[in-house]
Image (cartoon, rainbow, N blue to C red):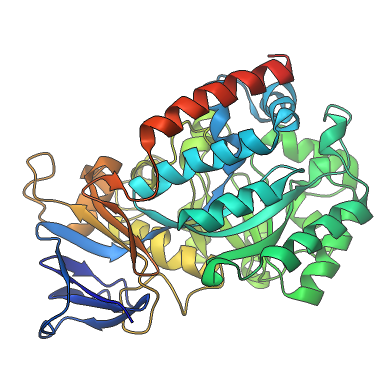
Length: 439
């Protein structure tokens, strides 16, 4: 049995009363066993003095397969971005490029304090992503993308319903619960534009039968909503509800354009919403009504989306944007810093259905932790810890990242990944992928 003490930090527990504690955090066999109190003798220690120690960030909407597309799909609106750039590149992926793309994402996520993700991958070769994640140390819930329509989509990205569902279930059988439970498998219909009613209804049935998370996109951009209305004769969220998908297991990315009736539906069905402000800005999609959705009791968490539409996977960027964009919409204080940190931790854990395991620094929880250095002049004097994290800190301030009690980043240095070798491999695989895609 392995034990470790993290000493010297100010601990943001993110418990129900948002207790802030000065004292040690003791980890044993991947679990937190003590917060505060006397430091146990004879246990190895890591000094994180000058840091805020808090639960690792939970990003609930990412696309690891798109990390190799960074800088190759700029300055386009959503549907053109998909059809002209992202879909051709996803179709061009092979196992080697998917492994490197995943590793490139994992490097940035862990380096900047993210310990858990919900990710939608591409249609094919998702086993390569899952194998890479299992070896990486990151906690991940992964869905192979499900698509069966859209004339503009490459043939390799469209599968008959039975094949798509069968492949998703085979991945579940092979990987769900892998790596000591760090890896889980979800269902991931891309969005209503690229899925037939038959596929959406089949996804709902499988989710009901196996209690699987469903990860999709919804109401991100007005043109998308118009296409769905033309296909289905109703709004996006009403259509998802009509196909049986609107349950507490549905995780809907974006929800930028949701009116009061649609927000009421989200709240009534306990659908989880993932807010991706950086991506929404870069694609020109709009500003989501986050404050209003949270006021209705909707669980709203955060994600960077993908490097193809954000170029960064840094949760500090997303937290700052989440707060400041609601201030633009509704005035300063519309989304306070402590609420944003809650979204990045507790709401993310709830979205994944892991609220009893991660998202708090508390005895019995998984030791998924991040230590953020707040001792330097760029964040001084750090009068309020939540304000410091949201408005002043950046990913490079992360001193330590831990998942299941294993230190994966220490003093900014990855313990499992060689960054220079990874960057070299990424350039090679990206060049090959672009050539295969004809870009």
